[in-house]
Length: 394
Image (cartoon, rainbow, N blue to C red; front, side, top):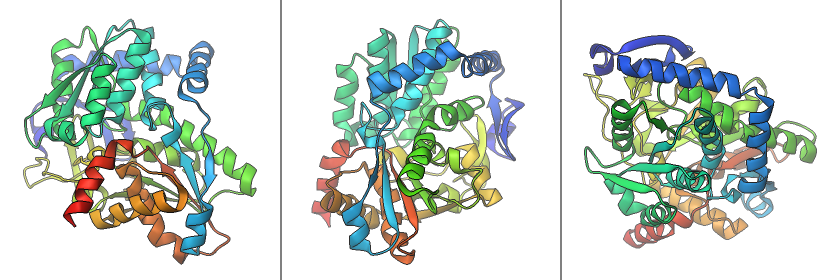
């Protein structure tokens, strides 16, 4: 039994994916999460809400974004045809804005004026700060102190947009610790605060909400690949940290059994390949933990993947066998970062480079008529200085 299960928090029967998910939270948060779930269930199917969401996706985010045939990369590798889903072209430079716009419109409907969020690589924080600036909401972002160093440019962006960035020095000063602080804030201020969670993790209804708003990725790519190739892809590849871009990239293909779903994580934080069932941050998932159920320290060169847990839906997809999960090394990621830049003129986020690294290994083993879609979850501007430092150390 994990520490969370021993601590007396109340277990909800809602929001499960197989054995994973649920809600393990202090009693005072149950009413908050129930109200959030009720609002989400109502507005997700409301025509006026969806009309407003679609307006911002088109006029503010810039969707739909392209599904780009990576002709030179495909030719260089000599295997499957590689297509890139270009989430890097969204306003703020990543997939995070898809979910942020959805949740902040929901917060607005619920009468919230104060928004809090956690961030690792800073992309969710930037997206949240951006949407709060647009709608005139108070914004506080929690970020691990180590990540504020690695992502200094994104910290400045958030502050420029009017957000208060709180550096968290507890623990390793990384994403897990930022989530801890954000949840603590919510427990203290739940009557006035909306927690805009950025990944497909957390207690119910957060994983379901994030899946819903990020499914726009695969809804588009499925339509686009059918237009371009007249058939579905053979494999869809995405990086995994908490799992929001991956669940969005997989969503429309989950019922399509002919399509392989591949998640890629850092070898240094290989939650899905090495994790065991446990409870972290109010939900049950596969996580890296010690014998007492405490999360183990993790490290990844990609701050957005530096997390000891994974979304409950990914945990279920792994255990059920519907999706496959692999890890790649730091060296493979740095090579992929450079390879995509040099063959396609696209500098990916270090997170996205994990998916590219898998593609570099897998595509040459596939037939030339086969099709691979790689989700480029974000652009790499934020990582250029860190990559420069890492390459200088080799």
